[in-house]
Amino acid sequence: MPAAEELLPPAPQPARVPEAPRSPAELAEEVGALLASGGDVTAFERALDGLVRHAHQDRDALLTALEPVLARRWWTKENHPHGPYADEYFSGSYGLVDAASGLDALLATLRGRIRTSTLRRAAEHGAAEHGCVHQALTRAFEARLWEVALHLRTRPLPFLLSTPTWSTGLLEPEVLVERLDAYRRLSARVAPADFAQALLRVRRSDRAAAGRAAERAAALGTAEGARLAAWLTAPAPVPAPRRTAGPRVLVEYDGTPQLRDGFPAAFGALGDPVSVARQRWYCYHGRNGMSEYWLALLPELPELVAARLLRDLSAGAVDDGRGAAAVLPRLAEADGAPGAAVHLGVAYGLGARHPEDRLAAVDALLVLAARGRLDTALLGTDLGELVRDGAVKPLRLAESVRTAASTGANATIWGVLRHTLPALLAGLGTGRAAHPSAGSGSAGRGRRVRRTVRRTGRVARSGPGGGPAGLLPAGDAGPAAADGTAGGGGGGRLTPSAAGTEQDEGSTKPANATNTPRRTFYSPVTKRS
Image (spheres, rainbow, N blue to C red):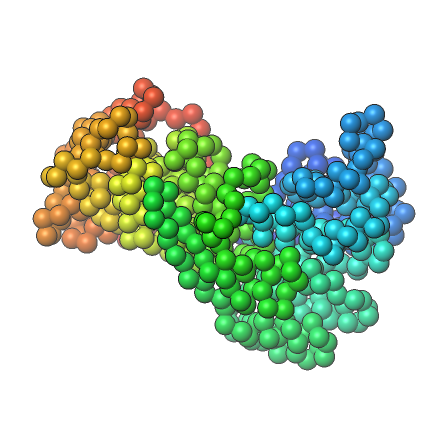
């Protein structure tokens, strides 16, 4: 039987960050739009660099162009509850809660609403300590903004060294060398946080390009050039993960000395250990849309960001939370290699309570597969463990599997399921009870799996050694390859129409009904044999 063709979406490509707006009027228009309707990393970084450049070139012209925008901000109005206290508001514990409030703080600085002493204190001592797992990410993000604000007031920088080249946050090494050379020619002083962020963003994975850039950087004859050269030629950090046990599986990381040594304290904290026991997990940070900005802090180390987001991601499956999985496609698109934390995050997303979160997880799975970065054994084993422990409900997982397979990713789905099914079907022969959180009351896992098979129209297929190898649509002959890497028989596609009716706890919605459309930027699909 011929192996079925694998239909995968084309891997999304990062977009190049355009140069900053050339005129104050254009910049003011973009800043106003960003504050009114939000934006992404590209829009934010472009506006940030534009404010720095135009404040250096002609501060008065910039303020004149920004006046219509400034007049609408709450901190310019004396009758607003916080208007007279903008200084205390922005420098308090919840002042810079998101990217928009960061831009607001910079505009308030230009307008003179924040005292120089406040700016200096915030730039020197950093953000308020929250003690949560996101603390290192928020400190690094805020430290750069406070440093920029202080320079807007005291000594405007000619431009930012750390503005990324790509929408993922990645900075090309040759671009950074050129910027350092321009600083040298201008006799401009490098800002520590700006340079630290530039180092953490610079591409090192292309060793040949990094080596060439290192030679040019060393030839600049400056301290920053020498530091960049050493950083580009040093081995990349490889954090070692450690999984926790219990009903909520998480990933911890020991410290990463390469991210601490020689960096300002706010950025060195990114190299601190990620610990379940020592850090508070519940805070407001998970609800402020900052995940993609945090990923742009460490574009080649998505694992260190994902590990700090895992509790939020797990809440979608364990606590029926909503929205945290929206970051999963961004994690899958990151420049660095995905590891234990990224795959575990996708596993939680595939079992999330809300359809839009499951769709985001399917989206991430397809991106990883299209980029050749999906570890099917790791993801499948994670899913089996989460189902076994009750963190992921089989019916929710079945819907995610149907959605992913309906796109044509047959070999990918079989590759994952062959590592998931041993745990899913383990209770059939033994009658072992499921973890109490796996279903209503004390229903056994074997009964839940039989119910899943009945409702989804799938039967278990035995592998070469008699063990389970996959879930097949009823009447499907199954994959031709013994190792489960390709689907077969009618294309091997698990379609929503073949799925029957899924009844997750508290739901009577047909399994093929959905409230949220699938993302469409992965069409048209490409074929892989």
